[in-house]
Length: 121
Length: 121
Image (cartoon, rainbow over all chains, first blue to last red):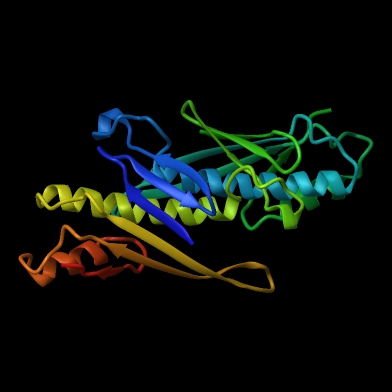
């Protein structure tokens, strides 16, 4: 169970099995920018889901997770106003020339969303 | 741009325009339960999105946001393992018998997800 309660201004308090987080709106949209927006939380959850699968994959294959990074760029669409484009990039320096290419493909394709693995050696 | 980096164990550090949050996994799944899971973050974002629209609606109609609450129950589905059911409940005590029924309907139907407005007077 997730519970969201009103916390003044545009701030919302979210509780999830004892963990508390907040959302807010940017100043230009009438908020106070004290926390990410609900939309950023959505994109954060997608990105963290991909990063979690990548992390577990790297651990399972005894590859370094040290500099694992998932970046999420996004764009808006209108009518209705919504996120219209999501571009996720997985950087996994633990995957080097010593690893077969299929390792990289499996990191990317194991996710519920498209992901692009950038190889850094 | 959202950026997720590895923070040890199953912990992930998420940064969104200067705001930082974390995800983790429950102890029974191998994590340390220091933060919500990526899945909980996803459900939190849905719930917060509904709560934000409700909050702005209530403000616009000069109704109280004081005890606004959005609860999100959910269930799992398998093959693949995923969230299979989401049940969002909006409690808006600011909406009373003095408000016409269409106000309650508009609070519920203005969201991108199904929402049930519970009337408390």
